[in-house]
Image (cartoon, rainbow, N blue to C red; front, side, top):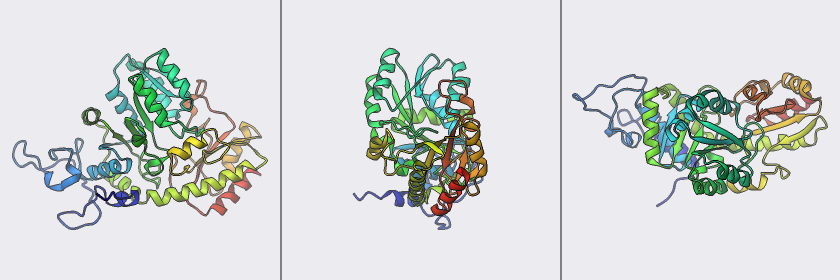
Length: 392
């Protein structure tokens, strides 16, 4: 059978014309409860594929047709059998870890993990009885050694990482994790499903902050997980309903709208980021550039093997030190000083004082002279001139 391409799936998967009106865009079912056809008689089966995981609708915390359309679309884009959407990326992480682990379990996390992920493990889940160990995920031998020293229930991977953009060999880690009886979870937020599909490389689950590239317009907060195992999916479904971490229908609709243009946006993000990285490499005010598209990047070959493109995130270190790095963040005109990433507009931030302040004083502390860019889809010539002016 013919397999639809990514761009086609982004526009059509889970998004059949509304059977009642013929509307080509799934409606926003802005409703909290649903009329039942008698006690226990739930509606919804006639809505087709978007309802395939449920018996029908009774209460929107449990299921909602708009959310179902988003979940079917994201499952298709990641090439997995089941997706569950959440109110935020951190809600995904918390629910997935609680579904997969029990108090007393051990987890490996990246040695340069996102600050919010570290905070979740260190400040929240540690009190639940979960232990963790930071490991450089780009070093497969180090991961294998850590698992041999102490078995882990979960290996949590970011690739590329936030904010140092290191690359993990997902296919290689799949074998290491499986041999140790651990689940492999990949945070695919920086790459997006368009550039990388971890399930095809052997991951057990892939997570996203859909706030970022999938939403793409800095106007919605959300998260999603796509799982390879139906049993894990059922546990996640139960927990999401039990703790109430599902997104609202309007947030789901905005995210679904953003997903339609993910492919064309990512192409421009990648193109702009590559040109900006090349400019930064030769700039006298820049000491180091972190971008997997550079041949000098230690993970370049692995990234080229497992990704369609190298993404829209670029980090660099400023020769003038921490104070000058902060000053550069304040001198841009088009790069807006702000947290988050993945929107159509370009953002600049100082990780040590902003997104990664929570790892200060820990083994995951980031360099104080580091600047992170989320490269948007504006005219690249304008963005380059903006950075050159800010760097002096």
